[in-house]
Image (cartoon, rainbow, N blue to C red; front, side, top):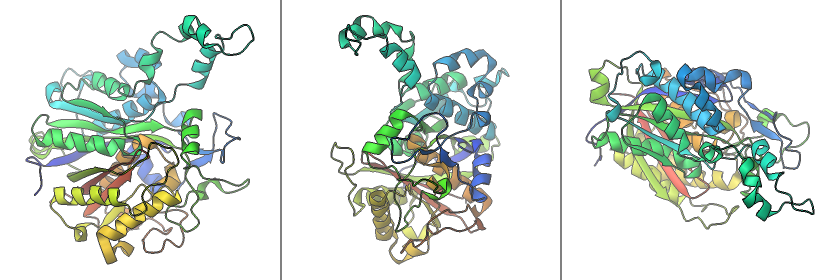
Length: 443
């Protein structure tokens, strides 16, 4: 039996990806078969297996351009992840045609106390130049780093609000302040599953009547030294060869798949109770019809492969289907994590084949990582925004690079028109959390 007492719809989507600001920019690039994977422009990653990342070009996103003039000074204490969330939130709210405090018009569409916010975050990496400049002042008499000097003097050379810049809840903090969202708010930090888990929490909050709308999703930048290091020790990085075409290195579900590249990006959705959206004359893009989550066994050790049977993913997907009150036969399209990391791909493949049986080979998969890399906590929400666009456009974006994905419809192909009524989005994570959502057309 479905749990929701109120139906929840998506009235706005916002993304910030290596293709720029807005879901339209992302959708166009995906349909054109573009990849943003290329050499890192900001760091020397020559000591890693790859120097390839999927970064957002400076000219395509400036957080100062998407916040109210009165709030621009606060951008000085925003980490990159927070900037991405703020940009995606503004896009989503504008697409939903919601007026908030940020528009400085004097009117608001949704009462602040009925507007919630749930945003997933990753392990935010401190800016290397900012941190090392302070560390360099903590040398002892021998010229080496001295922890005592650091505690007594060196730490004082960090900016006064340094800690506030890197707290994971700062993404939701800035978004709620800018838009005056005073309803239920939370931050979820469960690696790549974070944003879908946040979307699920917003769905429940609206469903039980504690809010009429929520801004929900996640964001993360992994295109930094700390992000690269974590992915390296987790054995997630692709090994790229000199001269290899950057856009071809990530190959989800391919027999020759060899890993992924770090990306940066975020996605936020405006979720509303259907009755609230109808009352204000909003156009719903799609319905968030079901949500499920689970926890896989995950030893506290980086680099440990996920269970090959995909049972944790199966549990989340089956819970989402049950929550939506539908069976596997109702699903038209699947958007998995699809990293190109062989062990993760194997678990996802096993889960898809278990849940969908003989249909697994004929359900189209949408794979995003060859185009935008692994955006960490932003992955699930970006995928949800793409799912909503698939439903709205009745089209599937192009797929890149993969050949020979036996048992799955995941090989490279051009964008094409398709009948898209129901989309399954699911995301496992490095910590073992799994989340799944059902997004469908509005009947």
